[in-house]
Amino acid sequence: IRDEGMVRNKAVFLAIGMTCEGRKEVLGLWIEQTEGAKFWMRIMNELRARGTNDILIAVVDGLKGFPEATTSAFPDCVVQTCIVHLIRYSMQFASWKERKALAQALRPIYAAPSADAAEQALADFEQGPWGRKYPAVVASWQQRWSEVIPFFAFSPEVRRIIYTTNAIESLNRRVRKAVRNKGHFPSDEAAIKLIYLALRNVQAKWKRPPVQ
Image (cartoon, rainbow, N blue to C red):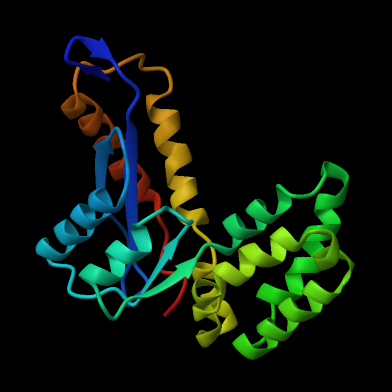
């Protein structure tokens, strides 16, 4: 995007919300060069000012300061970390040939029937060969544990929706496709207009709510 006579790379942030009726909506888009606690707080306060009364559960992917900003604006909100992102982070500690087996070894943790069972599965993993070989993987799960277990309070059908940020990643891919061949934009406003139109087209294709 051209900014003060120079073309700069800027990030576009998107938020998706799921209503109590199961209807998915794009809550907003923001263009920013940097991110941090102040930025996330501004976003959360903006959502509240625009009429978002409460958030039951927020699924995040480890963005620094984001969980704190969310619970500050919406004190009753439960923060759930994206399990897929946590698994991907765990894979970084292993070699390519080990990653499939490591992923299988982690599955009993997030596929457990309850939070207590998941905690036991994590303890078993820690004492097992993978935990002894990669203690950093165990540490990464333990550090985020309070944000790993909230989704166990829901039914398996709901867990499949809220344990991952795949929905937003899918939307990001469609937005990238819309802007990929446009070169640079003359202003933030021009980029926002094109992305808004792309989002409107995506929303028009969204199907009926997955959960009643």
